Image 1 (cartoon, rainbow, N blue to C red):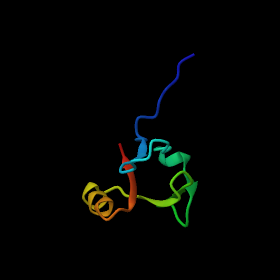
Image 2: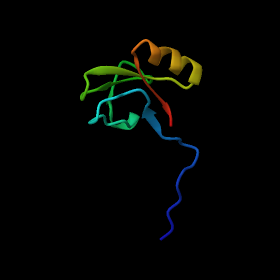
Image 3: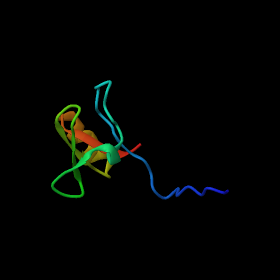
Image 4: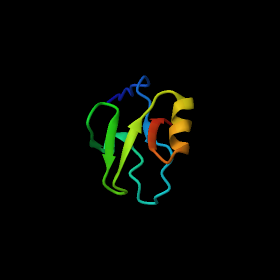
Length: 70
């Protein structure tokens, strides 16, 4: 059997969580209000999916939980 992995889908990870029990995988989170928000039941925070690295860094600096390509 040959398994082909889809290389076009990059893993999306929570990038600024310090919790040791963090699921860290975007797909493991509970869906939120739209395609760019999810909820973490470990830390009880909203997580924003952000593609732009500069915006991710700025939001993470404010304490917002952000996810993006790892």
